[in-house]
Structure formats: C-alpha cells, structure tokens
Length: 302
Image 1: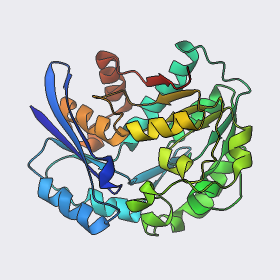
Image 2: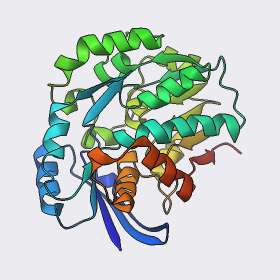
Image 3: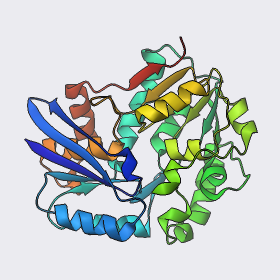
Image 4: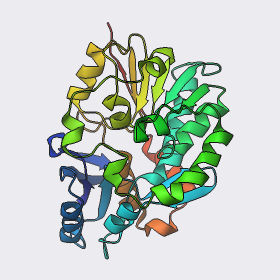
C-alpha cells in the first residue's frame, strides 16, 4: 500500500484520512495540520522524508503563476527543501490541468453556460489555470487577489491587467511570510467577518481557494455556485445555511471529503514513479483520464 501524507499549515481540526484504490493500487492518504506553525511543518516533512511514498504540502504554495511566469514563495521553498528523499508537491503542477478540466466539466457535463456569467475569482495567483479557463469560456471575471489576500479594495477586471500587477508586486511579496497573505492555523476556524459584500452579491459564481472566499463571506449567498477546492462536511453545511445553490470541488470525494490538490498530485506522482521536476502536463492528463477523476458536485438546496 502506498502512503501519502499532506503536511498542512492549516488547522489540525481539518485533518482527515482515507484509504482509496487508484488503478488497482491501494493508497493510505492522510492530512496532518500543524496549526499555522511553519517550523513544525518543516519538522514534520523531515520526519516523513524517506518513510512515505509522496508528501503533499498543504495550506501553502511553493509556486504562484501568472501567465507564463512562475513566482516562488520563500516559505514554500523552505518547506519543499525539507524533503530530501521523498518527492514533495504543493499541487501547483496539477492545478493547471485539473482545474481547467473542472471548468470544462461545468460547461460540458453540467451544461452551465459561462459566457457573460459574473465570476468572483477570489485568488487567481494560486489557480491561474482556473482563472484563464473561465476567461476563455467567456465569463466576466473579477480578480480578487488584492481584496482577499491583502484586504485592499482593489478589484481587477482584466487578465492582462492582472498579469501586469503580478509582475510588478509579486517578486517582493513572495519574500514575506506566507501567513501575511493567507489564513493559516487557527485563523481558518474563525467565523467569517463579512466585508466587501458587493463583490459577492454581484457574482453568480464564486471561485477559488475556500479559505480566501470564506474569510469575508457575507451571511447570505443565495443561489450562488461555488467552485473551490477542499471543503469539510462542516464547510458544506455552512454553505448550505448561507443559501449556496451548488458546490463544485475540483477534486473528487474521498470517503466524505474532498482533499486538496496537493494530495491528489502527490498520489499521481507516486503512481508515475517520477521526480516532480520530470512530470509533464501530458503525464497528468493521461492519469486523470485513466482514473476518470471527476469534480464533486453537491446540490445544496432542495
């Protein structure tokens, strides 16, 4: 049995474990949160190194993408470099494939016409493939990276403008502690503090990282479609109570829980038996096709 562990900077209350079969191979998959403590995450990766088949790095990005450019986060690299033997991944290599597929799934399988749909993309830097696919589908996308990562009321409404701003600000921003941008540890357990409600209200689809969208989420999201990543059963109920119509997660349901992209990428890496640097998007496309991994869809309102 192959063993996959996701070491997450997120809250330990979100930990989960599942045993799944992928291409006739059993996988023991678990997520271990360290409550926002980077040093503890580094120590955990070192402890697991050489003892498991692949390590996922959760609650943090190593690389952010905008257009054809890749930006490395200082803290993400520290965590990645803690693994000397076991391959470690942050999910960014798979996101570009998996999340584009999720947008196609919405159009082809769910018959959602995205042309002209108002989309609030809470964070495009960590999900550039999703953002680009939504734009390519004709959606009217508002890029909320400044709003939700930096708490600045600076909406960006064009892909070109977004890429220019990323090139201007990211080289310096990537040197800052990751917790400066992203809710980690206990911050993920705090109730949402509604802010910038106008951007949620005007959107028909709210897309991107769940913690980014949750931190300022208003009390009511009636009739909205949410396209996101990892959610717990408690998160699902929270969205239901706020009136969300449909939840779509880019990763499938593994025993009652959608794991993060880093977990799925780690499992695929173990199947491929390659180093992360040697894996291509074609490798991921082929495996995703063979596995028939499909987004999870939950209709929240009866």
